[in-house]
Length: 195
Figure 1: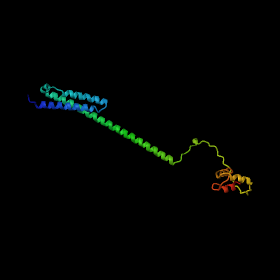
Figure 2: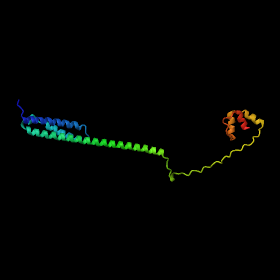
Figure 3: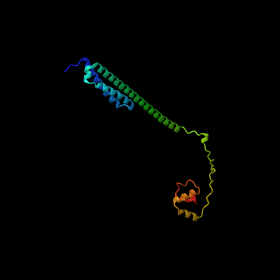
Figure 4: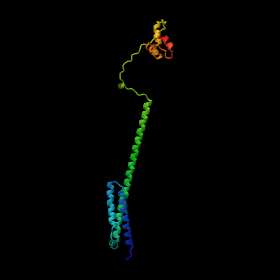
């Protein structure tokens, strides 16, 4: 078994780095949206192809193999970092937009509440076009206090008739006649009032 030279070891390290970069790019592509993921998979594929150099190629052309592997690894890592930066920026912009929308919604809610409070505190202003002509209310004729007339004694038959009624019926009759102040009268007092 022959010993490996420094240049060959450098080539083998470059192949390992290219394989690791391909793996990282492929893993990152799974987390990204379709379009950026497709580009990243292409870089990962190139890096994987560069890392699959034969032992014979490493022995005979180690510098060439190392250079190709390093370039592929650099491209894959750069593309991965760019894709992650873009994805983070897009996520941050989306978060800012959601925060802005939430703030706007909260502001609209508080404005609506304030408007409701103001509307409740202030009587509504009636505009002339909103006024509907209402019929003019007819004022009832003012009642003049009735002068107390001497009560003429009623026939005995009417008072006997009132005596057969209940207190509730007597109150109903007093209400029908337009009498006032009878609500706490006893039956005898209601009979005197109605006779």
